[in-house]
Image (cartoon, rainbow, N blue to C red):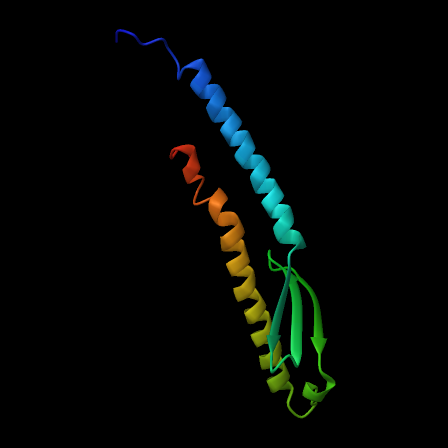
Length: 113
């Protein structure tokens, strides 16, 4: 093994570690961004509005009093579920957009992760 100087080469390993640290910092910044990002899911022409962040933590729900019918609770349940699912879909889009450049299984690390 002529010319082999042992290890992965000091400079290459240092660069790899710096790259990993930078990606970790970017990941943490993006995680914080996703926690602060407001997503609004709606249904029934905004009769039901669900507020959540891009990590799908629901912060609040608003109901138009017109959809609160004690004789038709099932309709209200369906509207709430539809608003939550609308919010989840939007949150997934934001997550993919913001996390995509950082991830794909850390593919930017030369397949090490």
